[in-house]
Length: 456
Image (cartoon, rainbow, N blue to C red; front, side, top):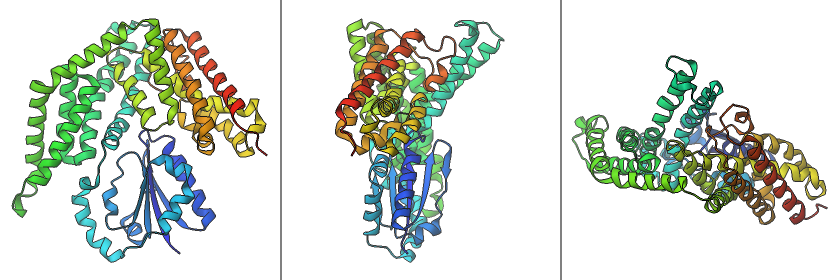
């Protein structure tokens, strides 16, 4: 029997990762194919694939939007797609993998050591590098944001009194976790590009971006600069074999860190700081009309691909503004991200004849994911009928985002769904904010009820 192995990973490591794995396992069972899936999610690597299993595999399926150390599969037939594709068409991916020509396991084993030294050469794509950085940054953002929000339980300015629990929570969340946000983003972008040699210059570049006031845009620029510089040095510097160990430990970190730092200080930092300051000033000066348009755009982006590149672009934009004390876009983004799963759940209740029994059962799970701000809960519905479902989701989320900005709602916690709403002072205009989510959910459900065809 042919053996297939797979790896699934999404930027947040929450929903797409495990939904893709479940879809592949289910499809493999139906085809009576032996399949092992390694998931690289928020809790780390689970069900990790061994070198022996790679050697014995007929082919590998990589369904990922972030780095998965894919060069360990060098010499094996690989089917490489975005993680959402494994959710939409798992049978097709397995069939494609089965039809690939198998490689000689002996040849693969001979290449393992070489592959480990050249992993970065197989990694391409700015989006994947960016999402690797975002994925590493998100736990800091969420933990820091929630700790800051919890500190507000004691009063919106209670943290200013030294020695109090509120001050300690603010110090941990804002002074530590948020201070690491940009350096970690930058460092792991560089790590995705050049592996360990890129980490030090990336972290330093990100820290300089924070110190110079260049914010998350500066961190992204520093990460790509440090990563590609470290990769170039790694491929360019040639030393005698007995001195090769100096490259990753001494030469590359020293040269890449120095050049990245100097460019950030003297060339890149100030222009990007100007961009960030201008963006912040523009957001602060937004009139109601422009604020509504921004909320409309961010809301539609959140629902367009439900956890994909467009969704993550909107979320990253909002998260990056938290460090600049701009909390309105974050509120619009989270509300709009909750609406799609909640909308499809409500639609299954209002128009059950428009959905299959499996979809009606899945609607309950979608509701739980929706209240938790996991937009991916709507993916199965969109995958089965994208032409009718995706526009409905986008309209509902756009309405929610626009209303959130219109109501002047702000959110200091970057995740958590309804579970952060009861925290005092975490959300402004709480009643109107909840109303925005409710209205968007109803709009989505009504559109789905009208547009979808009755199931026969």
